[in-house]
Length: 347
Ligand SMILES: Cc1cc2nc3c(=O)[nH]c(=O)nc-3n(C[C@H](O)[C@H](O)[C@H](O)COP(=O)(O)O)c2cc1C
Image (cartoon, rainbow, N blue to C red):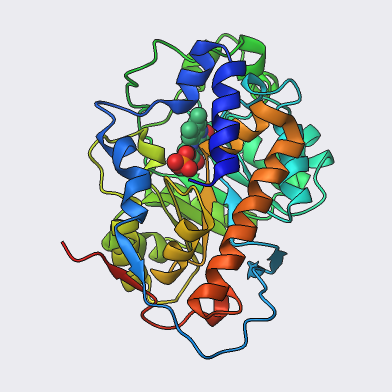
């Protein structure tokens, strides 16, 4: 793990109330998948290329028409006001100062319009479907109207898995309901109405494509599922096991990435998240065929440790580490990676 990320994580552990820290840190079940996540990226080694001019390195990429300073996005994570009083407004400022992109969670703790007003770059909106479907539809409409550049449907969460270190989410009702309250039909229980709809189907994915912006499927761990999502209209795939918070013992995303990249075969961008903690982890993911990666918990620790400035510092450090890795691997940019850069460590 990069030193600054480790320092921010330690600072956050000191600053945050115990139950908030544990809400962010925890995985599901016995935390087998969580425990494997970071180590899985280290099971690969590089085959660097030599003999080229590495004077100028450019980490920038283009994704759905937007230029990003680095191929690293902030993953959708819930309730940033638990980490910082400004919540997602601070996060998006920090992310955009680093030239990155925020995927705003459906379970954000600031009004979507307030986060959008603080944006100085592109952002996407992560979608959950709720027991009361009309609420989700209205929230998505607001995100699109507020300027979301893409929708990311999280498909690995028909139910929220039980978390070992957790007896409830330590969020206030106001923060939990901030984007829902105006859409609640009369007489419904607000918390029941906004629990996950277990029927998050390919039809639901297809319905989202009607908004006219790209729709990505998040939570894909199999090549056949990736192809089914493309058939339903997905414009991108996010390989993810939800940071080890849904099905425990799900495969590491580095393993699933190889299968999904092979199946998708360049038709759409493939993104990946889970345990990515350095530029070399990013380089490994790119070498395995990802177009970009997302980071989850490091953004939360950075936000808790130092607000927007902490988020910028974390992303800048990952960018610098990636630039150094690219140069030493013999690539001037993510698009310039040599074929066969990454190989599994022989067992
Ligand atoms: C505290 C927390 C909350 C999360 N909330 C969401 C969410 O609201 N929607 C979603 O699609 N994924 C959510 N995720 C999963 C992340 O988007 C991402 O897949 C995961 O955190 C990546 O792993 P990493 O934390 O090891 O980088 C959450 C993850 C954490 C740690």
